[in-house]
Length: 378
Image (tube, rainbow, N blue to C red; front, side):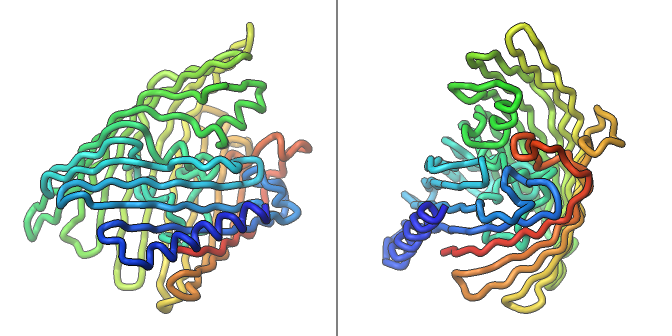
């Protein structure tokens, strides 16, 4: 971890020096973070958090260039280590060309970010958020790379509805998603004895529609996605028929205060075949959260949220089928480059964030957790 952390910070610092130079339309941005977790019980996100863990290092660099008034290209590379998840492999988060005809219509192609919910297409930039961990029922950090982007095309735009109507923003996409080879989904499958030389993938399509209302500071929206998955390995195969995933969200900003809420539903039935045995797991995940934050000073921000996730296809009285998380958080910006976050989690249920391989003695139904992160951004 120390060598990897040092390498990433040196890489970002060097890029920061480049970004400070006059590079015309070329823009270079990046970040590096070091996280810490300590939990009163259980090991969270594959880290030995019950003893305190620093096994959470992340960094990314993005490059954007405007080739003309209408055409823009860019990409972001990313590396992370979170306990048993991630590793030294440098991955491409996204890489795309963006051609904008006018305000009403534009197109992207390549590995494009998914416009799903409030934060999915922004969750790769830690410096944007107060929160050390976004609500895990909707934005699971152990599968961020898979959720963030797909290989495909997108059409997008916005249209004014007049002074009394606000404006609408819209997008539609089509492409192929592939599981992160270093992510949580494949680690969970390996715990069942299934490995895949080529990560499972599937066709996805969907869209997002949001209305910036004439009521000052209020925005509401909805997203929808059709998702499928197939993969084969030496021990067997994985198949998930296309499923429909809806999401609804709202955001209201008033002065120094901000309020957000989301609701997602994920009904799916993945089928895992291992030799002669067939395992079909039914899920009907209902996830929601409500959050509030306040900018106390230019440097200090505080907030809280409640996140709720339950599998309605199973016995919801069992701790393994739900997760409830009360969170209080604070962030301090030391200067325009360095910031720190600290967060308290009061976890009830074990439906999210826990892995058998790092909890061999079983799980306690409740746990409290401290999460902290320090970051550098430019």
